[in-house]
Every structure is written in structure tokens, then in C-alpha cells.
Amino acid sequence: MQVGRFEAWTAFTRGWKRFEGAWLTYLLMALAALAVSVGVSLLLNLALPAAAADVTTTADGEVVRRSSRIVSTLRLPFGAPAFTTAHNSLIGSIVSAALSALFAGAFTAFALRRARGLEVNVEMLVRYARYFLPIFLLSVAGSLAALLLGAAAPLLTVIAFLAASVAFTFTQLFIVDRDFAPVEALEASLKVVARNVWQTAKLLLIGAILGLAVALPMNLVAASLPAVAGITIGLATAALMTLVQGVVAVALACAYDDAVGISKTGDELPIGATGAATTLSSGA
Image (cartoon, rainbow, N blue to C red; front, side, top):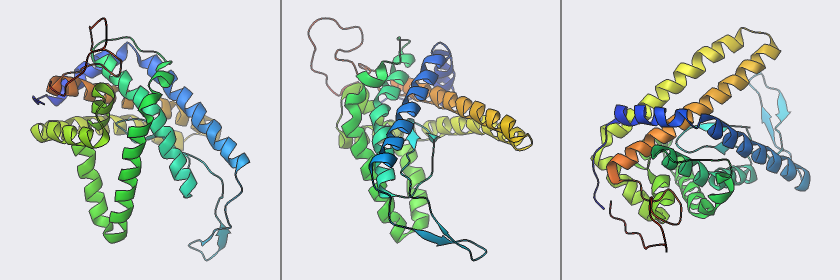
């Protein structure tokens, strides 16, 4: 596979323009995914028995019982959790990873298609759910690696997480765009990043700065308002942060396109091809 170079700011500005025409679709996709996530969490809380009593001691010495509810975290690709509810149970963690993987293919395909100016729709959440297994396996492998490293060296875990966040930035793009297996996608992402280390880090940093520029002032405003108004500001902040994630996702897809070329965005045929499906090679 031949790997070229990309320029972070060029990819970001192009991604911003391509996202502008589809921001409402992305937001609707995120809301639909959130609704499913909340629904699954509620069903599990009703269907499964409560966890054994788990108590903890607060800073002032009071012994309190932790929540035994099963809740989940929905993560959108290329960013921090979009919608989060806290829980430490193993079942909750597995459900969170499964729900995130279920929708990751659709959000990745959204980014790839918008990078090429193609149409997108909410139905993609169903059509691209077929990428659940490889993305879920990657999530489980990453969680296990973090667990093992965390037990041995917590500081090393933080460093490893930051390094992996950069090195494997394009993994899901390879899975959806070229049907790569998880290990093959990890290797391919590493090759792209190795050729574009600073530009990849710069692009991720631009996204982080944009997120802070949105979240920080909104949170400060929310903290100074009455509860109802604060909740409204909080919901608006969540929506804006979701849109920021969408911009960064499309920008990363644009960078991926510059480096190796978008092939088929998760569809059966390469972009622009007609007729019987062809066998895709890993060449750019």
C-alpha cells in the first residue's frame, strides 16, 4: 500500500466545508444512536437482577451504597464520549463497547462519504451495522490492554493511550473503506501516521482546541444560571460537541483520502464503479 502525505489544516478546512452540508443528518444520527443506547440500558436494568451491594466510604467517613444500575456510554468515532452515564459494572462496560461498535461503522461511513461529497442519511445506522464485529473486537482488545497496563504501571497507561490515539487514528477508516481485518487495519493506520506523525497530531490537536473553545465558555455560562437554564445550556453544549466531533471525523477522512485515497466508503463497489463487484486490493 502506497502512503502519501496530508496537511492537517487543509484537511480540516475541507472537512469543515463538507460537513456543513450534512450537519443535521449527523446530529439526527447521533440522537437516534443515543435513543437506542438509553433504551437498551433501561431494558437491561429491568431484565437483569441488581448487582450485589457495593459500598464505599466517602471523604468524611460516611459509608454509602453505590448504584447498581446498568447504564452505558455511547462513543462516537474519533472523539470523546458523546453521551455518558457513569457505572463501574463489567456488564455496563461491555454494553457500552457493544453499542459504540454497533454504530461506529455508520459514523465512519458518514465521514468517508462526506469527504467525497456523497449523500448521507440516518438509515446508514442500520446499513453499516455490519462492521460491528471487527470494531467491537478492537474495542475489547484495547480495553484489555489498558486494564493490564493499568495494573502494572498507571503512568505508562496514560502514555500508551495518548500514543495509541495518534498511531491508530485511521483504523476504523480502513475497516469500513477497505474491509480490512482489525490487525490489518491497525498496521495500515500505523503506516499512514508514521508518514504523517506531526500532521496527524496537529489535526487531532485542532479538534481538541475546537472542542474546548465550545465547551469551556458554555459550561461557565451554565454554572452561573438557574438549574433549568443550566440544563438547557448543557443540552446545547452536548449538541455542539457532537457537531465538533462530526467536523473532526470528516476532516480525518479527508486526511485519509489525501494519504491513501478513499476506495468505497463501506459500499459493495468502489466509488464510481458499476456492474459486478470487483475484488479490492490494498493498493492506494
